[in-house]
Length: 106
Image (cartoon, rainbow, N blue to C red; front, side, top):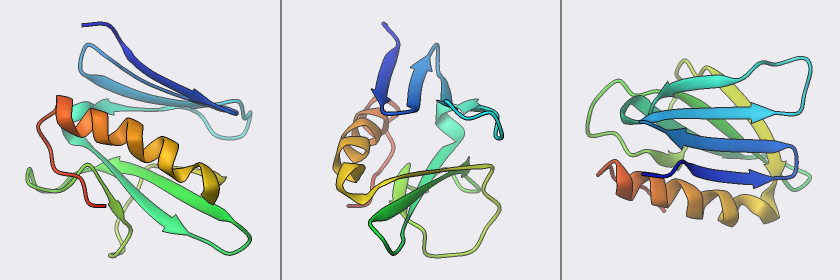
C-alpha cells in the first residue's frame, strides 16, 4: 500500500507501513510517531478561530481514532490549525479510521 499522506500549510501527516507520523515546520517541537493502531487524535476548539489537534496513544482498543477532547489525559503532541481547515484534517483522519477499522466521532 502506498503511504497515506496529507500536507496542509506547515503540517505534514503520513502513514507508511502502519506507522503514523506528524511533522511541523517548527523548530521548537519535534515530530510525533506511533503505530496507527495506537493513535488517537482529539480536537479542542479554541477562541480566535483556532483548533488544537492533540495526538496520543489509546488506552482501550475500542476508542475512536478522531474525537472531541472531552476528558483530560496525557497527550504527546499538539498542533494548532485554523478552525476553518478542520474538515480537511477530519477527512484524512476518517480515511485512517477506515484503513485501521477504527471508529471516528463526528
